[in-house]
Image (cartoon, rainbow, N blue to C red; front, side, top):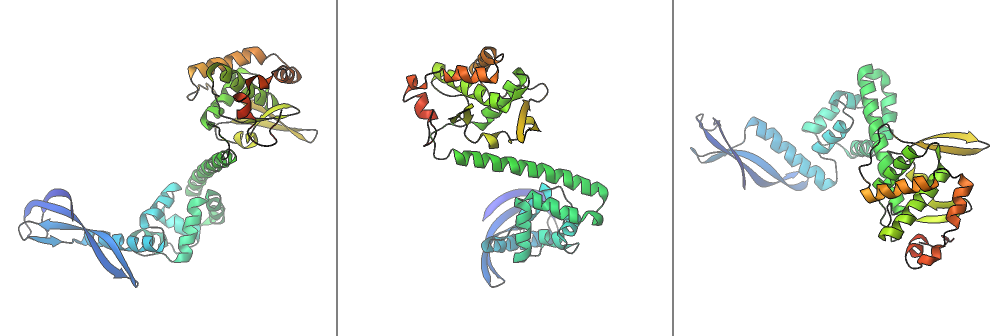
Length: 329
């Protein structure tokens, strides 16, 4: 038994105005052939020395018991369902319509009724996949108001963008899982934005070389890298591992055009961009790199970088960059 709080109110047990203690009590019961443990809330009257379950507490305790049952079976709880609905800012009534269920189904699930396994699977899928919610929303376009439809669509798109970014981050770190690298994607994104702000018409191939050169020079001075990226060499210079995923991260902006069956990328930054991730020494190094390399053509840039004898730094930068088989210079 746990004391939660004390309220001064009309006690429904003795019908007098006095302080009433609220207690949480662990209880055991059987529901649908399952024995469940749950926490029930009661009022305690010191005048009669008795516990009281008001009408409101009866409803709350019943829901607590059913949520304990749901948890035992691996179902979403009533609060889980509320959280899913809040995730898309959708009303109970409209959520039922979008799912193609009875208009009061979600209301019942959030208040007193335990959902079946099929509906639980649908709700779980909706929670994990905003794109699927968007598809179901489009099917129900005519059954909800235009204003509500646009509101839910905007919210779902934001959730989809967020989930896409989380997927990209997980995928990038998965590529680095077996590499001893201190990758910092927040710094990588800021590096890209900083360089795009300083260098006009910044193309993908040049950006990759600027990132590598910045990390290389910073390592010489400080013994560590700014980004934590791992690079490998190609005929066109250095390329960071996972870079095609990195440029799709939220916070990276570029335009792409098709030229002779190949895609050209030009990176830009956001208005009034100010880095929040890079330290002063890192910003100074990036500025030095821009001053040193900005005026070079791409072929001149590659030539300058290729003149660097990386093996002068054996067991330091080389052991870091040559991180796996095939990553050779």
